[in-house]
Image (tube, rainbow, N blue to C red; front, side):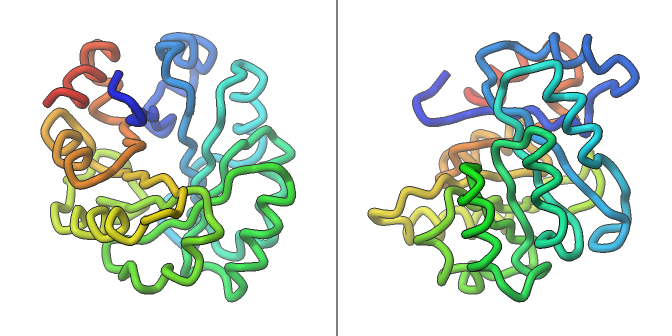
Length: 214
């Protein structure tokens, strides 16, 4: 696997009824699992809560990246950390005190990330880039799996790469990642590629290679 590039499986696309089998089918060299947490308010869909995160934690020692697509993440982030999350990301639109939330997350010895939607400008998160561990660029509109990749979001990835300089944040991208868009995302500067629908359709190991190599 290419240096610094990680494919991160999205558990939104696995067979939840066979959770143990689904988790064990993911190659061990994929060190991070992505969990999309949706509350039915910030986005229309409803998915995982802390109990599901705990169920996954009981089955694996891998890092668990919880993407909080929820209103008022300040109230709930602790529950996901207690359940086993090692990474917490939140949408910049969902809190009036981003600095405070970043500080609280990192105080728990957990990686903190900020998410930007396709319509959210990079300028909105520049004040926080010195303090976060990663930025998640949504390359689809959040809420549902299997959506088509929005090519214009690659400009956000390029801008974040240009802005990084001596900063240490990772650029993550999520939405519509496949053998074609994955290569484009890597070229633009993305380091962590979240994939679900494409990754779990067919042979996972072959699909990983296709994402990395186009």
